[in-house]
Image (tube, rainbow, N blue to C red; front, side, top):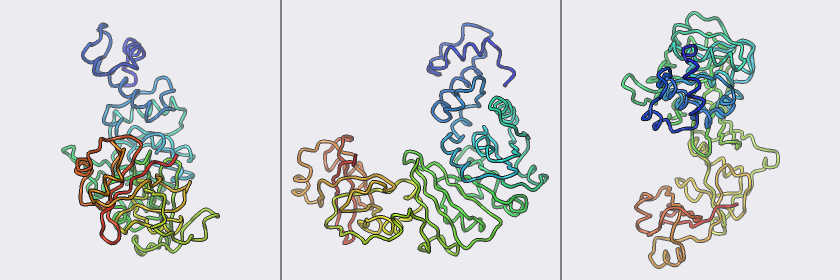
Length: 406
């Protein structure tokens, strides 16, 4: 494809790069020399890249793959994060190259980098783009298993197994992905000092750690409070501890747990120097602020560690909401000022919701859905009021009516 885009098609792409692709498809191209199918793919890809890969968009001549590959590829932000996790070394192999976004950023830390992909068209696109981006590397068209069998030892192997079955349906378990990392694991450990594995954020990370045995680090990565990726770093060096990092944009929350059980309490928490001393737990009754952990912490389930690090108390064990008398500027999540707390008593609700006609509603361990509660409260969606419905430790149903801090 990279050589087959003629200058008429390139001119069409340049002229219509900001236009609606669906409208362009209906209108067609007046010039018969324009390959409309190619043009539409490149225009759509470039528009997606503006959101996901801003630095690549600035490079003239980058070729974009079909829509599905563009949607599945990592964003620049998450790829840069993976590069930090991957670190530096001598040699690196990406066994599931795809569009090459992760490969490009991880390769910055390695002297020798090799891209492997079984889709010949993607290999051609990747080789073309890496040359434009000034990345020295080698490209091979092969299956992961075949290349792994023949390759020599390297510092790092990276894999992002395909999470769709033969019918296009989504899969989440490691053994249902392609390639099956569980089957390849002995050979992976033989051929690399460490393996970095990207998995679906829907996966149970505790089960993955148990299944893979050699995991040393778990990274749960969110962007704008939406959980995007689960990264597992697997090493050959034995370790007694498991490092767990919850990342959301620039916010990082890290703990270390003993490897013998992923659900045990931490023996060591890596905190900033000013919070090494665990604060006393505040009284719930005197709390003026409510805090909701970010998506990565919610996924990790490390709620007890929050009460160790910050002056907060849980509303209840299953609420995943935290209260404090103080405003906490560096809490890893969203903070709210409580303006009222109400039971589900009708009179109390009327008093607490007086003057409020719309609100953002969330439920945590509550017997009603958001829609059911919204209908009961007769409130429109939106506005600057936030209502958190939950169940207290004594079983009472409560509404925390809040406004966002800042």
